[in-house]
Amino acid sequence: MPVELRKRKAPAPAPAPEPPAKKQSKVSKAAAKVKAAVKSAAAAKPAETNGSTKPGKPAVGDVISLDGFGGEVETNDGVKTTLKALVDESKAGVVLFTYPKASTPGCTNQVCLFRDAYTDLTKDGLLIYGLSTDSPKANTTFKTKQNLPYPLLCDPSATLIGAIGLKKTPKGTQRGVFAVDKTGKILLAEPGSPAGTVNAVKELVAAGGFSTTKGEAVADKPTNGEAAEEKKAEEADGKSAE
Image (cartoon, rainbow, N blue to C red; front, side):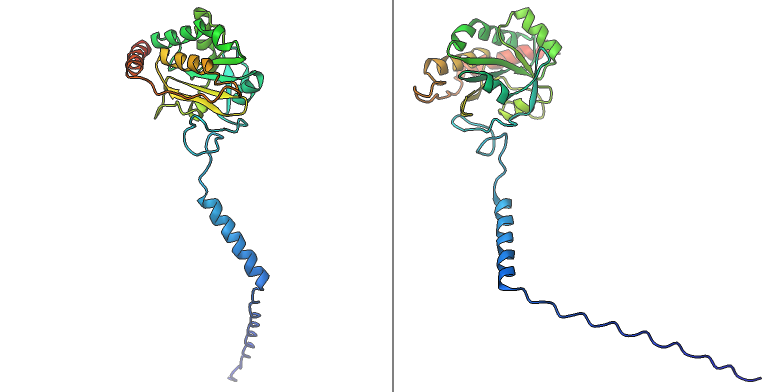
């Protein structure tokens, strides 16, 4: 039987060699260095928080950017608003006092103290608001029952409460007071007792803290007596909430 001869397949052509890499020009190298430097500087720069020009909790003397500060909250009447909108509506600035829970003893004492001092505190164009994580319904009931002349703000996610440095960890609201003028300058930012928060605003107004011609306001730290009063109020509020 004759032997059948098979043809071998031709070998595949060798791949063409890759062209040599082009050397970076001096301009390209310089541009790369600039990009790397910018990226490094951005990574090293501390992130601004809460719209403040300084990182961390806002402090007296800081100037904050009101745009977007604290997010959106709601009045007890169901109207959406922001801190910027509230400041824009005011003639001199805004005071926010925080309270842990509507209709509890310590918080009732606090809102009534602000109610009784309302006329004197707002005579120069200052606007006052209570601020808590309560629902509009709970705050409306609270406002109506105590005959409050100012709105109560509802911040269920505690975005604004956290932005002004009065949110407890992991949750909860620390009683305190925060004041900012029309320029975004923080004039008060401190925890305090029911009476302590009101007195801080009284002292600020008396010193002309919201006037650009009468010097700067200084936020005093709570005294030992105020600290004891606040502890007592928190215990009463906690028992009522149970």
